[in-house]
Amino acid sequence: MKQRYTIIIQWSDEDECYVVSLPEWGEFCHTHGDTPEEALKNAQEVLELLINSELQDNKSLPEPNLFRKPLQPA
Image 1: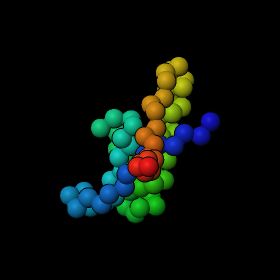
Image 2: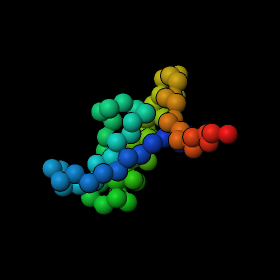
Image 3: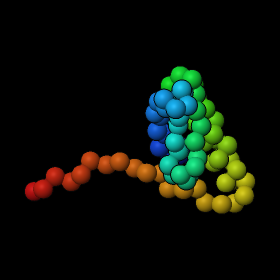
């Protein structure tokens, strides 16, 4: 089962690196990387660990945030 979770990558002047947020997993779920590619790789690793941990503990996974086009008025 492939889950699709939100990964937000932003540059942080304060931290001088790319900071990644994983919003479905809570406001404090972050990782980082020196490049956007490294940040994405780290985020994917964290997501895999989070998903495996939840499944091992028989907990339900958070619902992915899905972005859909708004309905057009008729």
